[in-house]
Length: 413
Image (cartoon, rainbow, N blue to C red):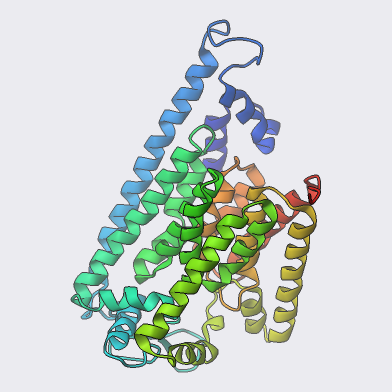
């Protein structure tokens, strides 16, 4: 709490507490480089411009410090992901085993010696953590299986760290005139980033694809954006909602390219592994109890843990309908459309982890955060689970839906 208020003071200069809550009012003064829009920087003594330059310079020091901490964390976690360790290679072991099986024409969605098997308190028996990634990711895992698993896990950990740092640098450069210290710290030091490194997870790949696609969309590079979007939805089909809704904010070319790229990547496993590969994947997903994990943040998963799966499915379907209706009716800005798609895509999915919140970083970073949003998102940095991770995602979805609803409706030509 104290750190957030300190950041607010640093970033807003002489603005009052009411301006901190408003957020963007202070940014309007700082961004244009003078306290009075009618005065030049020379007439005003150049102080606001110097202050703005100093703030923009200090944000790079914050980025550098957070990046160093993330790399140190990677150095700590990498030696822990070993085949000889008590927990083995963790999730990365499941990826490696799945890739090995696919390369040797076996079922990649079955358990093998390196598949992570562990005990979760409150869960009957052991949890067999099968790879549930879509078949489009199997060529990547197959390539990893040609390397020693211990070496591959270590390289994977550092690649993930550098992907996080690269995404933060890209967002920092894109929004260098108004980005806040708290936003950089939230992205690089959130539990989602640390947990990704510690488990050998693949979330950094999806986050990178989402961030790059977002920046390209912001710059209206629709063809390039469509390629990254196509990769994302082939690897994580629950984000197909983003591609669909982009049509209603004028980015139909990006959607068309994304659909083509995703279709090609989804057909590729049929040629590589045979027509039965999708059946094996569906059976693995259908029989998996990942909803039991408290850091699973889909509405259906949460309701299933509470003993009411049907209610969860109904609420998720209703939220999906409302989100689509708002976008189709209002045709909101790119930021609000994308924020709705990414947050609702998490909540309405059959399975979603709290780590996916970092995929929303692009739309979230496009504007400064007020104190309420900062405090809500801070919950994703804390070592809690369950509803404490679900609530921030619900708030973000409501934030973007309300922002879209307040926009004037764009008439269809």
